[in-house]
Length: 137
Ligand code: 5GP
Ligand code: ZN
Image (tube, rainbow, N blue to C red; front, side):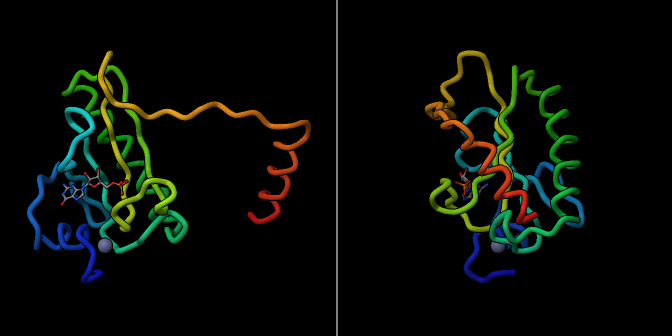
């Protein structure tokens, strides 16, 4: 629990939210400013700021929950697709520094915009990066 963290306060029920799912490690709440109908966010109950500080056990459990709830959302909302996304750090668009995973239902012709300009690697660049990163695993 972090006293200055809005998601810790939501998890601790100090601030109200609409809960969709809860277990001992996670809760999923409806996003207060939804990108689309049904936009929800999975919160890790423990105050973990970002994925760089998330342990392997919680990381693996999180995807099990996300996949289970995503299926229920798809059935109920009849959405055409879903973005599962997760921002880490201000540079990546994170605004609440308590780890969360977005479940954003997508509807044909909706106004949600999650895009980037496709770049290009130079000769051997991708392989060199992959080799360098792999050494740190
Ligand atoms: P981020 O930009 O950090 O990836 O996402 C933070 C998300 O938390 C945003 O989609 C924002 O709408 C949502 N959010 C921020 N404050 C609250 C709140 O008090 N209640 C709920 N339910 N969602 C919140
Ligand atoms: Zn927190």
